[in-house]
Length: 112
Image (spheres, one colour):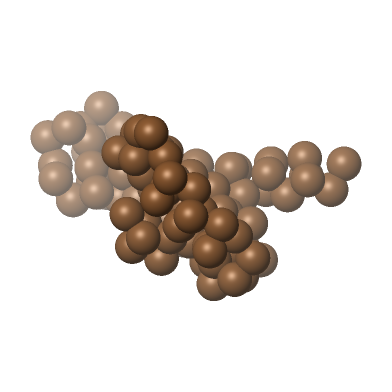
């Protein structure tokens, strides 16, 4: 269970790591708490400023790639399920946009 703490950014581990390891060691539900800790690692990474910038750049690139992909399809977006390469670009665009939105909304709520 101590390895789960390594999923978090270094600044988070330096501040909370030892405490989390102690809490997991004394937990009555270590597997549930461990899964909870793993699930929230992505949110902790969304607080890192460089991740915010990278997510925005990837989202922009993914949208351009997705636009190019749809332009190459004869009937437009309706052909996406029939072509694996267009499905990959759509998945990357959705993932990147979701990451960017979560990152930006979390920074705005923490500033307020």
